[in-house]
Image (cartoon, rainbow over all chains, first blue to last red; front, top):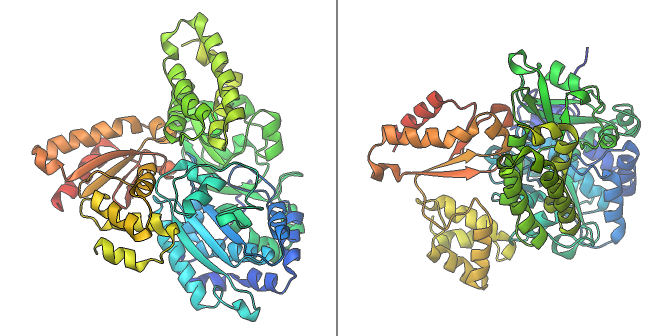
Length: 416
Length: 152
């Protein structure tokens, strides 16, 4: 029988999220003490060894990012930033972590900070997540009063402080460099990359940026070791992933399972199958910046590589299930309208392209069946150009749903 | 709390502009950033007014237009739309018309559309000020509007 394997969500629902004593009693802050007794470089080496990849969507190896930030300069000012600007449609895993176990995030940040010798951290939480903001702020105060945050933490000589920054309703600020602009108090416009934040981040200083779920995995990896973490998941995608399932299923919600779970098992065993006993038509994996899988992908293991080989992406772990009666074209329109609305307007190809692509797909049904194929293929070409000529992932994303819809649901586009 | 008090709470660095705008807006009975408030923020940081407007205008949670006592933000994400969310705005408007036929009383309610609120397992959803309401049905919306009307 398949079961959840909770690591990032280890305390979720089991402890009072407003009590630091509860967190400590369940083994909290032991990994911090262990980290502080290690050479700081051994900490990021352990994360590298574990194979943990960023859980925000991009899947970059987390330890490598830490190492390159640490090595940018020896004794200079560095920052750790937690990206808690969860805005990818269909995704709510970071909200659950912050609401049900905020200290797991704070401990993860402390470990990340020690590994690169950062002295200041920011948690950037989206403005709509009131409860998270409240709980994380309270947890920071508690950690300060217990000596886990502040000066000379646990008599180690290490100083670190965390401040919460609140977003104000911009999807784009979930992009790492745009997020830094927002922390600096500016409009959310993306920066040119490189330099990467590991070299020049917040106020030009080397900055390590990690997602909430990524950081929540740090303490268990340090405590139980990289080998333990590597024993979970698949050969190339280690550990667990929180999937948030919504749409036409009986039990929508969040499920943390080992990497490599089959898409069909996730939907049928964990999320209770499709509502009303209907068939599955499509599964949107990874949110708006994600891809559409079809019922022929149900046997596919969910890990970074297996999905990539099939032209799909894991993204943030959002899974939206569409039953046999749903229109894939309608949800595609909704996604394209979202990108049009969220484009910041800095890059011309994205500013014009997101609006243009939306208007074409929006009026697709007005065309004759014969015209639709060439128009849709031309739209894909335009989205490809947009992806190549835009600075940030927003302009690079619409190609993902468009292309996967064409690969798996071209019939729906051509006929209706 | 007035704008001057709010400004005095924060260190003088520009990184606090967003925090300050949030707090000013939350403390304004009309839930918005007035031209006077923005002028005070600009002169406090010694930056051009356009810079403060630029920040206020970029983020969708900030409003430079006055809003009602109740800000109703309806999620328009692809997931909520799929689960019946497209009709929610119309239900809200119809419910307001039914229970508050007097248009001046309706001014206490401002309806906005918002991107994904991260409540997708309870879609469709909306937010009234700081509170989330999920698994919406026409009946639920009706009783919510009645509840809000009672505490006007």
